[in-house]
Every structure is written in C-alpha cells, then in structure tokens.
Image (cartoon, rainbow, N blue to C red; front, top):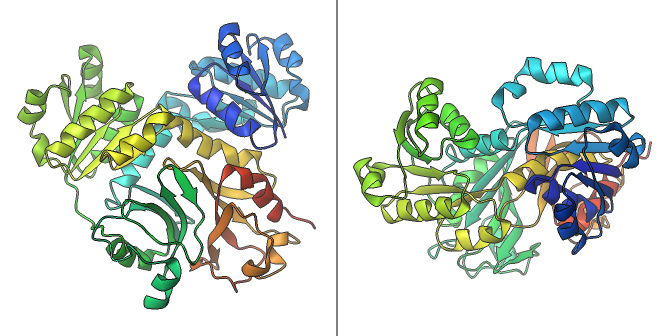
Length: 449
C-alpha cells in the first residue's frame, strides 16, 4: 500500500516507522528539515521537506497514487486542510488527527466526510475512553472487547499466589476442563512469547488472554487477581485527556481533578458538572494528603509530563490506592513503569496506531487494539468467501508462527479457539499477532472470490 504521513508530531513519526516495517511504501512529509534528518539517520523511510497544505508538495509526494494519507500535525486545522486537499488531488482514503472534542460530534464527522476526509481520529479521546473502560474492569491491566463483549482480551499480571504459577498451559487445560479462555501471549523480561502447550507460567508474567464473559471470574482467580468496587477517583492533569476522562467518569464515580494552571482550572469548573477541580500541584505530598488520596480507589495521572505521571502514581500506590493509571508517552518507559508497580500504562501513540492500522489491511478488519505492554496487535477479522482461513481446521492451517487465533464469534456467540475448530465464512476471528506476522495474517483473511 502507498501511504503518505504528514506532520512532525511524535504520532506521525511512530506511525511512519510502524507502517514502513509492514511492507508498505511510506512517505513522511514534514516542514522541518532537521526533524527529517534525524529520522533518515536510522530509518529507510522516504522523506520530503515541505508544507503539507501546499498543492505542489502533495504532488511531489505522489498523492494521486496514495492509497492512504494520514495527517498528524499538532494543529488539527493543518490536518483537516491537508486531508481535504489530498482527497481532491487523488488520495483514495484520508485520515486527519484532531484534538478538540467538538470535531468528533456526529454532525462534524458527517460534514468532513462529505468534504473528503474519511475518518477523524483523536488520540486524546481514545485515551480517555480507554481509561473509562479500565475503571469498569478493575482487575485487568488492559481490556478490549470484541463484538459487544462476546469475547474480551484481558491483560493480567500473575501474582505470587496465582494458582497457575509453575504450571504449563497443557497442565492447566487438563486440570480445568472446558476452559472459557485462552492465553495468546506471555510477556516476560522484555520478551513476548506466543505460548504453546509446554510453556510454563512464572510469577510476574504479563499474560494476554482471550476470554468469554463467563470465564472472566475463573481467569482472575487463576491469575491471583480480585475485582474491587470503585467509588472515588482522583485525576491529575486537566488537559484534553484528563478533562474527557473526567466527563466520562463523573457520571458514575466521585471524581477529584488536579490542574496546576489557574485559568485552565477555572475553565474546567464550567465544563465539568460534578467533578471537584483543585488548582494545585499533585506532586506535593501534603496537598495529596489534604485531599484524602488514601481514600481513593483509583488514581489517574495524565499530565503532559510522563515522569510526573509515573511519580504521582507511585505516590498514590504508597498511600494504598488499588488502581493506578499513568499516561506515558515515552515508549521506552512503559516496561519499567509496569515493573515498579503501576497497574496500567496509556500511550497515545499506540492508541492512535490501534485505530489507524486497520485501514492498511486488505482483509476486512472490524476492530484493532495496539497493545501497550508488548509490540503486538490484536485484530478482529471477518472471514470472507474463498479466504484461506476457511479452508482447513485451525491446526491444519499454515498460520504465521508469530500469530495465534484466540477466539471466534459465530451467530452472535463467542467461542474460544481450539485446534480442531473450522473457521466459517462470516465468522469474526480474534487474532493476536506480532508485527512481523501482520502481512501473513492479512493474506489469510483476504477474499479469493
């Protein structure tokens, strides 16, 4: 696929590097020559210096042959204008990154689609939605639902007392017949394992598991986790992520929000209906104590500074807060943040990649989730007539080694994948895959009719 990415944001760079590694022809257009020189030093990306709202620059990027254009400047207006021009110049599909919630109303999305922008994506809204989802599923470090919760992907960290420690997948299957979940990945010491029957669980493993709704309680029991109720939530940071998370959460929970900037704090008191907005620095221990941090059930830190988010979550953990969520934009910090005790990491670059990557697939993809803890993705594919996935039982297919089928949704009912299962036309299939397997998995689901 021919893909053009415009902008000099971190999201633009992450998408360019991710997609270029998946056998796509990617051109990155950015206004800064210095920015592009840094990229060229350690990447094979095709780069072009220029203003993406210039018709000539877009023509130089061969926009008329672009299958997909993604505009990811910091400024939403640049992204909208770039997308509109690109579509008029021949780009088949255009996606624009926006920040402000008002762009995401149904009417606004409909209007821009009529003008030529196929999709609007807001990293902040995606991150806020993920936070709200995590606080309704308290025992999971990450969770993602497929087809109306017919199946779910959960990330659980195996605690010392977990009954599965020291047991292989085969032993667990023999001990507990009729399991309603399946492990699709084990992350251990910066290494991701696609598990086989002989792989043994160890303390501290991060396990991604596809589960039916009826299997969640048993899954949590085996991993040493317990659900707990949330009533009180503290949020640090009143930017786009924090304010949108508060808007979603204040309908269910008692929410306190810290914002350092007095003008922004004043604005938030008008935006938020029942959230208590506190103008102050949450890094100050006395302030946290005075606002009863020890009484909180969940603590969410989403400032623009990753270090602040990590530090304040660790402070909250020290005061006994059960659930901590940190926005960490430096991908290199993610693994160490989890290892020192933060429950869940949110990363806007990965969240945005989750949304966009489905548009680079030839097969039909209903949903995707770019996973925070591992360099991997989970897809919900539709099995099409004539596709290779429907030709043989799962254990007879030449499925990519760095991918695994977790479950199948058929006739509106979720099923955990078994080796002897035959995927049928129309099934929605949940697949966990490492980047090197994306292309091979896509080919398995392409229609041959």
